[in-house]
Image (tube, rainbow, N blue to C red; front, side, top):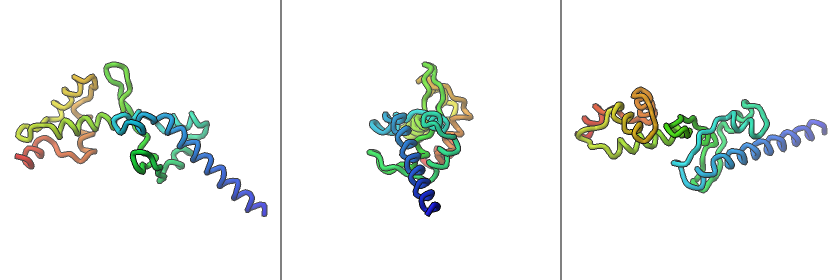
Length: 156
């Protein structure tokens, strides 16, 4: 009987922990949920751990392999956690937003003269987001977008 009571208590504690973590994520990412991916804010697991008052490893275990139904569809909880970079205005911008900007620049480029990583870095710098050419290349590769030479050969 004691084991059954402990099991029920542990299941209830887990349910409440998941709920509290989801609630904190929603509070932090309200703009993302209301207005879409371009509004995601940088957020680390540690931010939620501090907010909820639990250990970082607990947050990591809770969000691993869990999904949530949102107005944007079903989203993996890990998707809400993204790193950020500081722009020229001192604002921290999500690396997801920077990747979206890189993808957009490449989508809008002249296929006969594709943008190099250095040119993309300069265009982003004009918008106040300073990245090295190597960082642009890293993000581009993470999105499985070929380099400018390969894009020219494919489209040209």
